[in-house]
Length: 334
Image 1 (spheres, rainbow, N blue to C red):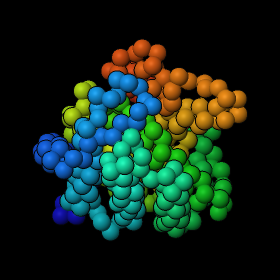
Image 2 (image 1 turned 90 degrees about the vertical axis):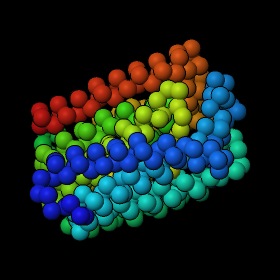
Image 3 (image 1 turned 135 degrees about the vertical axis):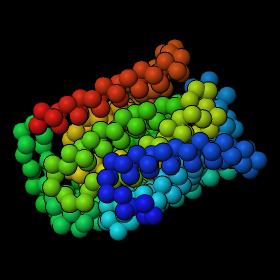
């Protein structure tokens, strides 16, 4: 808030990015050392790809540093009186707490056994509904789903709250499921953030003061770039659920707030496919007793087909870049 007097939101978003980037570069190194001393090491599932056993013990829960940098940068550069900034900070804090507790439980119990799936999803669902209701009130009860190209607003009425909550909830878990390989989730998230910043700046959804979200998104991109420095193959640290759960929730919240959910689904298509691969795998196994993929999420399927880990990651990055470009192109067509 100290520098929120700078009138140009793009300039403040850039400085927020730089601030979070520098913070991440400096403190991620010390977090790795601290996490090693405390034994905050990755717990690897025994039923996963065998090559992942080498990741056992690598520091995790680096989402703490990622989001601390985002919050610090937001406090410095954003207008804290803006309701959408307040909602974004609540998204980060609430989902980070859920993720961090899950990370700690996994470390203590071993083999990736954190929250029970039921309890974890219940907590996320409650928080997502709260956030969706807050957005509904902050936007003056706006309940329109914008459909690009045809330039049509579909009125969902009160059901928009459920729809918004579902978007936040789904993407929180989708990003979490995608975060399974070194550097995997960072570049796709940056692509989606860039697309969201373009949508936010153009802002054809008629929601006032929404452009202030660009500062938070800028800070998030800076933290993610710094994290990638340490998380690229071979990774020295993992973000854990403390990083991935709030990341997906923040992306979903931003998309809902600026009323560009459909274009967001295009830009975040990789996350959708990764999550659907898990649902389809479970559904197929319970219905037919057969698996569709060698292993889900989808990136593990290609690992077990023999693709080296860096190859899977980079090819998924390329797909994300293409999807982000398509989403922005569709917006311009509209």
